[in-house]
Image 1 (tube, rainbow, N blue to C red):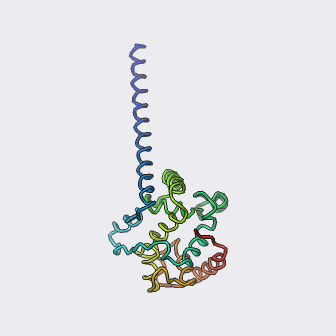
Image 2: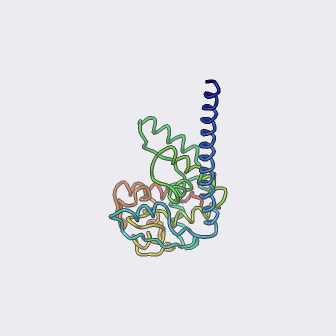
Image 3: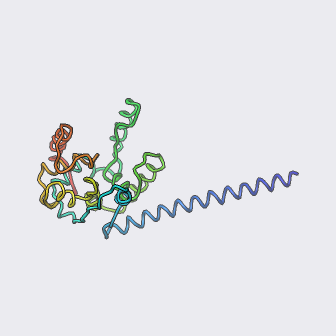
Length: 235
């Protein structure tokens, strides 16, 4: 009886070890898959992102409009506006703005719900390239891992270049070039400071605003971004 019990426990332990080992191998394999793509994108441009693919799968989706342009052909006004709006410490942190995260957590605790986020440009890019828009802890953990890999593989200039070329700026509109032409009829290189601040202002909800539409909220946000642009540092 004791021998049978021991054999049962041994089999259960082996099954647990095999299951755990398989899970660890699967997780490591997934991380290597992410890392291989990041290394590839250090020299080559991504043709699509997870966000683009999910958008295209929607029944009511419009054709995806996106045209890649190199970093030098994107207005510095837009670069500064986006950094000022989304990640003022972009050049100083290693993927995570811990001070902003702490402030967001305190604000969310006071409100009793999620009303503020603190995602950096690197974190947003990790999510856009690979992940879903869910708010689960598992997804946030994977986002953090991808962000860590990107910050140690890609330069800040490359991270910002990819971000500006894949960010959503309207219904089916992705990237700075498509956004500039759709909303203002100009190439990304020719965006004015006002046009750049408007594009940066709508990033949190780009499908709500079409072709330069102004609202009191957007106007106020544009003023805030414009005031911060002079001190915004870009790579």
